[in-house]
Length: 236
Ligand code: URA
Image 1 (cartoon, rainbow, N blue to C red):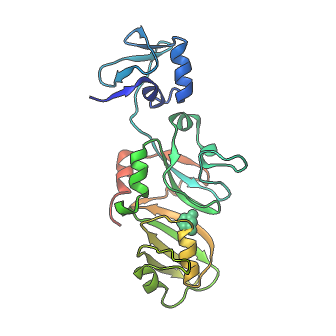
Image 2 (image 1 turned 135 degrees about the horizontal axis):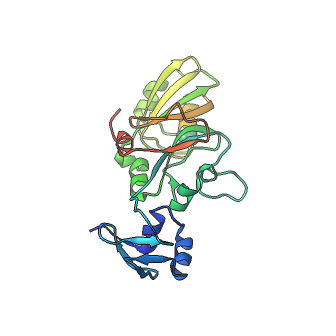
Image 3 (image 1 turned 30 degrees about the horizontal axis):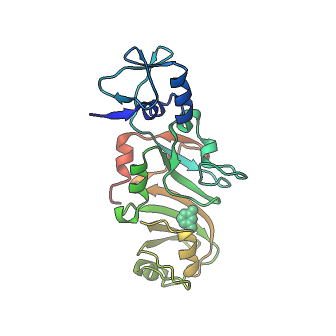
């Protein structure tokens, strides 16, 4: 039986943030099956009718967005000084409390997933799940001739940092594609620097088989269907 606390039900219907939901409940604007609701009450999504100002609320179990993250924006939900990816999302997404699944650097662009489903976010990020992220980089120096082998063997940096085995392909003299299944701090940049090729520009183009929608302008985002979500967990 899908039972949730009323506040969670309300955030999952996109009608309020958690704190707004409490206010709405306190002021008597929320009814469960016609009776005034109280904070903390349980709602069975299959049986109970919840209304806000007389309008029924529909429960949506989760939302998953794809964003084309632009450069110059930090991957965070809030920041005192910098513009965040959350600032680019609409009110519905904000009310749902979406958060980024993983991080792209401020100067990295491309595919970023935002969701209110913590378990899904974990599955995308956790290296044990083996979800492959694909990046395309422009480098300012041609990578060393043995770059592919060293990256495939799993690089160890001078400071002891170890990267899982990954894959690099050359797309041109100064252009490479990198496939990773973990997301350590500045991983692509540090990996390519270690094979003599400092990154000048970086873009994430895919997660699993889910590719960045070319119709999304930088800064734009859209909801994903369940089958698009499933593509992230398919082997490439
Ligand atoms: N690796 C990096 O170095 N930066 C990113 O933003 C993502 C992966």
